[in-house]
Image 1: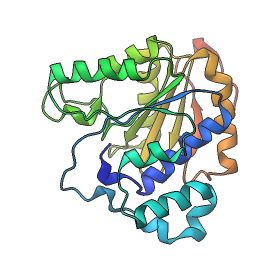
Image 2: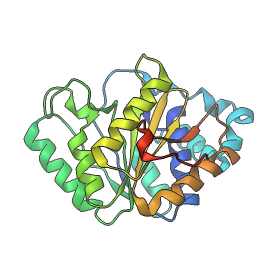
Image 3: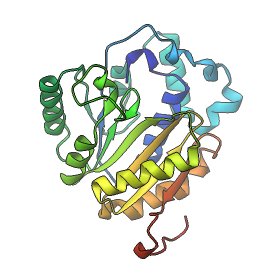
Length: 246
């Protein structure tokens, strides 16, 4: 996450999803921004939705109004959401992330200490899960690594991850990445929340499965599928049994 992206349309959907989760699931949320230094890209300029309240405001009126106010006052920082109480009693880890193995190890250790005791931890990397960049190498700050996901899940928290869509068929990509998440964590269930531009994958602890199913069922009441489409991603192996439909 970069502060220059704060408040854009992807952020609106992201915070809307987190608020929907908190409304349906009795979990203590930990947010790891994976905050990185600004660059010269213009990805965060997608603010036109704030000028279209007739289309976008109804999904989450309080969130829309507060983000609109923040953008008018040029408050483009993740620190704003931390002070807003829009995410209830969430705990935040806001240390800046850069490249380097030693730095990354210390950064993640601090993250675990800060978010210890949280039921659900949301990771917000610039790009998403690791692809071809080695741990600690140049540009590694843009990615979350599977070892970090495994460690977080093993400590007892459900894990939610922000992921940009690559240029490939989305349905197959979601299923493949969800299966990898299930394999890496041995999660009880995996849920996907897809939006027009980004994906959120949730590896659920057993004690959270029922609550997260409620989230997936209730989400269409406020967020139509064209904005956020939720589903429980079933495993490929038939031997694991059939999963109930949402």
